[in-house]
Image (cartoon, rainbow, N blue to C red; front, side, top):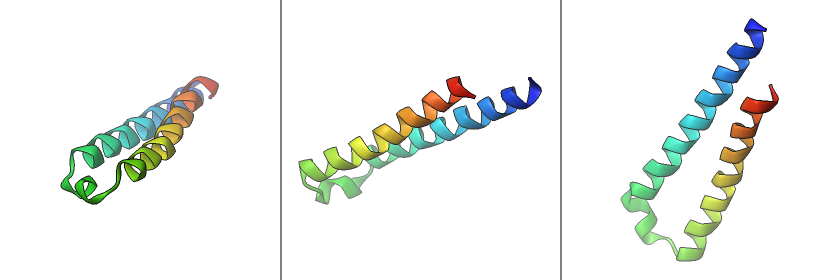
Length: 60
């Protein structure tokens, strides 16, 4: 069971890291040069990955 908690902690940490990256990216000046559709596409891509990582915390 201890290994499972360690895996779960790792998955939480990876999900939080990606969340922070998304927030940082949205807060950066670099998105000002992008079209709305490009921002939306990147958010969808990263959003799905974030949800996958969050789901992993419950599976493992």
